[in-house]
Amino acid sequence: MIEEPDDPTEQDTAYGRLPAEDVDKEIRTLLGSPANFVRVQRIAATLAAGVTGLTGDDLLNEAVVRFYAGRRAWPRGVHPLVVFKTVMHSLVSDMRKRGVLNPVDETVALATAGADETSDTRCQVHGASTLTPEDDLSGREQLAAVYAAVAGDEDLELLVMVWADGLRGDEAAKELDWDKKKYEAARKRLTRRLDALDPDRRPK
Amino acid sequence: MTKPSNFNSFVDALTQELIDMPDEHVLDGRNVAQLQTDAQALLKSARAEAGRRRLAAAKAGIGAVRNQAPSSNVPVSGVSAAEARRFIAEAQNDPRYTLAARKLGEMPDEEVMRLYSQIKRLEDAGKERDE
Image (cartoon, rainbow over all chains, first blue to last red; front, top):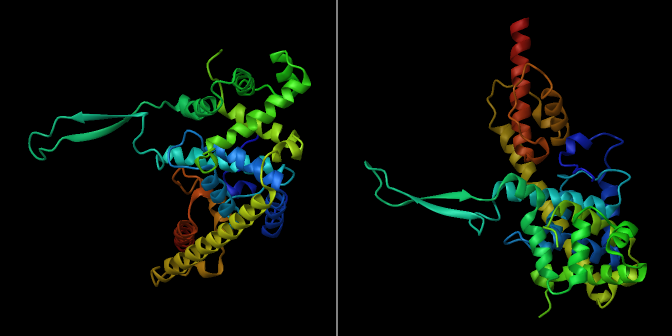
């Protein structure tokens, strides 16, 4: 897995990161290709899945803003889609850590505690997160959202499973005992289904 | 079916598979003209927002310099946020300073400039004592 170039200073060498004008060219080239625009939208929709209040378009927009604002480094020699994937992944991870997106959600139990005897008589409410660091790292909620998007199509559920197990391409096809044609057809269907993860592109 | 395992692995596989897929499979059923319009709109609005954030950071940086104590002789105004970040990154490895465990890359420019100014002042004070 490619690590997130999270801290621009770590990449801030003449060799490690692209200068601003080259970053501009990379972004314009990527977004200038309709196919690549769809690709990056699907990655964004998937990363934003299961995160309340965040759409894929919000996430993609924020990543582009950060690049142009000089807040994120663009590493040399890495595919633009991988660069966007790692930066958007980092943004989602940071948002989740800060609890900006999910101040109260299904993973947070609201516990009422008895009022202090001496002062405030109002009930006090404390957020108690049931989301463990392990859950957060594994993206359990996000993966559950992906499974929900393909629910009812067993082939797609199996494909999600093997990709989540770290297999892809020929290796994944072999694991599923599928020929190349079936694998590519399922891959095409799966990636299209991911559009439904973004509320803005959900079929009406 | 086994339990969901690893979302990161899924996203890595998805990204690579999307790269491997032919454009016609990716674009199947999509309106290319609309995609081009949407992409250009995204580019335009993101560039405008980035400009606003850079301007806000620059204004905050100037404000921070103005608010410094008159005794300060640190030439912050001639230092860019990128230079200040590099300086702080080096200072993090300097045993003379204990810096809070924060990701420097996540710090707003104004905070970077403030921290830079503080470290420089400490350094200058140390030099004066040594002299």
